[in-house]
Length: 196
Image (cartoon, helix red, strand yellow):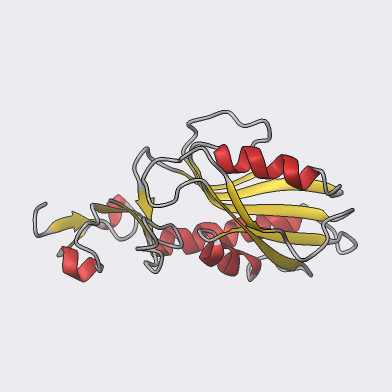
């Protein structure tokens, strides 16, 4: 890899800045796909869109899929300007590889009851769709009043039985990291989404 990579921190029309891989925090990072600023703007929009769908009498539970969604959920719930509750569950189909194994591991069931509640399931990225296709039926067995899906990134590689109601960005077919997304537990801390 070239020791210097030209990367756009915001939109391409804003110009680009040259960074060394060391300045980016990791030598394997190829490019920034979605800047910190673009993510924060879109998360604020998503928060407003979600809040507009529910009334003050609605019992809303934001349920984040860990580990990848933890930063997205934290930022998103602060932008939903209405009373909500937050809980998490851990589900993964990746392990240490770059390709989904197809085997879903669920390590934790949400502590909050979802029966008769309006659940907003928050995912970091929809790639193969394996995790979502397994988790949604499990949640539907718990009888929520409604179940909607919000994802930061969607690669649009598969058609899901239940499509995401809220999508932050359509994502390229690259292995994405940062803003909670990892490769073998690395890169989660980056404030932007990049590719490796």
